[in-house]
Structures are given as structure tokens and as C-alpha cells.
Amino acid sequence: VNDLSIGEINQVIAETKQSDKEKIGTSADSSSAILVFLITALVTAALPIYLFTSPMFNLDLAQNATYFGVATVVAAACLTVSYSTAAKSEQLRLSKAREGSTVVEASAWALFYINALYLSLFMLFAFYLIPKIDGVPAFVTYTVSTAVPAVVLAAFQSGIF
Image (cartoon, rainbow, N blue to C red; front, side):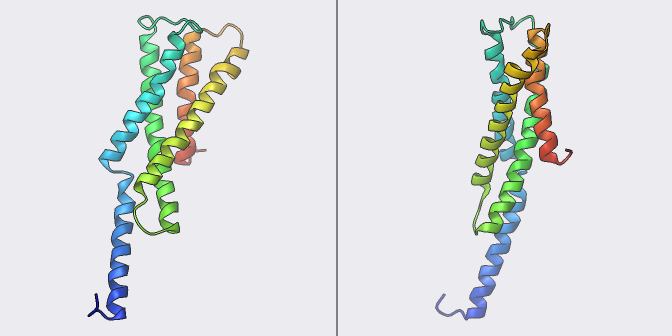
């Protein structure tokens, strides 16, 4: 370092910044990040099953397994897309604001943000909007309140809406 000129030091710094930006651009799409997002999405989307099989809604797990499975898989797929898109967006925002890797922070923020929105929308649908419609069976309430918020979030995160 002592033998380097100011120009050489600036060149090393510029190369390091470029290398960090290249890493940042692909990290939200890495297979490990997608795997974390997918596992988290499956757990988050499956949580309402516990609520709907409780005495509050009293749905039988075996009889409604098809509804539970389809709605959970659709919601998990949409949540995974939402996590990935939100993480890339947040990673880009953070990389402009500071130097260094922002992968962990962006991924954590995406998980927190999307889960908070998803669970809030789920509660809104399951306990406020759908119960206002008379005669809606509990399995329809489950399917709509689980899948629709995830689809809406994926659409918003992808720029469809």
C-alpha cells in the first residue's frame, strides 16, 4: 500500500466497487436465496391451515386436503416471487446508499415486509371481508384468504398493478 500512487489506490477502490456491484446484482437470484424464500413461503402459507382446522373454523384436514394443498402451493409460489422481487429492489436501494454487501439486509427486509403485508391481508380477508358475505363455506374462506393476498402481493411486486 505504501508503494502505490494515489491513482493506483483509486483504481483498486474502483475495481473493488465494481466487483461488489456485480455480486450484488445476482445475489438475490441465487439458488440459496430462492431456497430460503421458498421454505419461508411454504411455512407462511401453511400457517393458516392450523387456524382453519382449529375449533374456530372446524375444517377437517383430511376432507379439505385438496383445498389446503392447492391454496398453500399457490400462495407459496406467489410469496416466493414477492420475496425475490422485494429483495432485489431493496438490495439495489441499499447498494446506492452505502458500500459493501447488502444481500442479508435486503433479504431480511423482504421477508419481514412481505410477510407483514401478507398476514395483514390474510386477516383482513379471513376475518372481515369474507365473513360479511352470508353463506360462504369455511373452505372457500380459507382458499380465498390464503391465495388472493399472495397473488395480489406478487402482482404488485412484479409491477402488474
